[in-house]
Length: 495
Image (cartoon, rainbow, N blue to C red; front, side, top):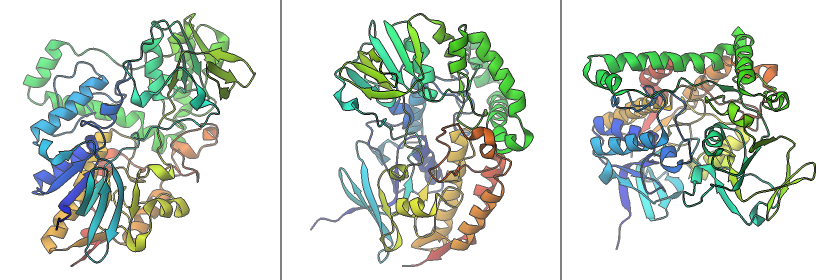
């Protein structure tokens, strides 16, 4: 008679979230930890996203773990391949390779209240786990557009998050749908090679200049040799990140920061785009910060090229040979690129598999009816021994690495206390959960998202209910609270 494989902790996802939690657990003495991921390598979003021009939009010095800082970044904003290499290096340096099971997709997780374990079904076999950590990030499930005729297109179609490097774009007529963060990087990277590039824009994006420059060898050497150099570089970088998103997002509404920054952004747009009509189409009609802005030094100027066209009239349908816009014109296309983003707050994305807690209640159904909510973005009542790294109202908009370290600290505190008590089950109390949710709702007033200027943003920050499940506050506060919450905010039960 075969027995089902069991682990103390199963982490779903081997991107930086999963890696960071696994490292924190290992440091705390938790050895029986298994990471599962449907990819064939580590890195999460940086494993999957390999499109031309892919790079981080957070400075490299902030886009790393505080305990594993690199001094050999090639640029101030690292290219995607370097982030993938960093993930592989972390796996090697912290001896995680034997704890990761790739090409394994979790299909469901259900809590067994009698046995105090999670039954985890995967594409490679069933598991049980005392604790489950969902470490899938918000940019992990590509979102495909609902456009009539998409399946009928006879040319090459690919989502930007699943780039086909066998597809040659040189000399082709290419269309790209979307002008979000990925498109902003792809468009200037391919424009010179294609015969013609048509950009289909629904909502223009605020695009700002990027302080992107090579880190020359002497500077890299200094970072590696001078005592405290990496710490100073990270501090300066973190202050910049804090000022450009958490500060503006959570306090910009009250301070009316847009009145200062938007004229600067519009001046930059004017300096980059020659044609007044094109410039008008690229001008956002919503406030800066309502929708994720982008940073790039050649995106806007790419629209000065003769072989690049911007279409804003809307797409009616797709045919075998092209894209038909609302005015009835068909744009002939050889290659169709879908820069349509990811499922972020959709019901089937949080997470992308069924999670059944007490009495079989699916967490997705609970969030669908009662709105997104969680305790510090990590746990929820009714789901014992289950934790998330990117849960609702956990992320404040800073570097994801800050969030992962804060989340990992929270999870380790809870599991360490449960181990000390000999508890088989740990669950956040409804009282603590409701207190936390009341506090974040109380503090959202100064956020930029609730200003009238955000009405036309069409931003993935907003859920279908009109909520923005970001955590108000600066990063130092977030990290402190995740490391110092009362341990009796959780209930501990015994087998």
